[in-house]
Image (cartoon, rainbow, N blue to C red; front, side, top):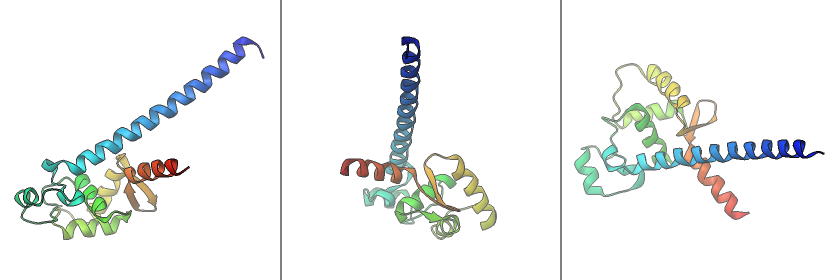
Amino acid sequence: MDKTQAYSETLATLRRDLLEAETRVRQLREAIGVIERLVDPQAGFFDAVGLDQLSRQRKSPSRNGLSGLTMIDAALKVLAGAGRPMHIMDMVREMRERGFKYDNSDGALRASLTGSIERKSEFQRVAPATYGLTVWTTTAEKKAGAAE
């Protein structure tokens, strides 16, 4: 193997490693963003993380209310509260029960939510029409790496 070929292979390896590192950095930034949104008192996520109950009560008359949240923020809060992946129909039902307002039918909400979730990196599809939070996978991978 001549020097030029060796350099080319080394360069290809370094580029692949850089791409993997950039992907990991993006995943970590997304996970940080999800957690920041979950603990941001202004966003109304007190129930998801169990923060200051007095502030939570001042924020919304409903303890677990989703009224006033965006569809994505409501889905994040429902999943964070469940602590496990959920089927889209169960998420819609939970969102409605907790006061999320959407002018159209549950079917339209389900379709809109599915489309939005598919475009957001905070969510991960774990089975057909079943989604969890990406941060759960990141945390599980971190724990698995620490155990090795």
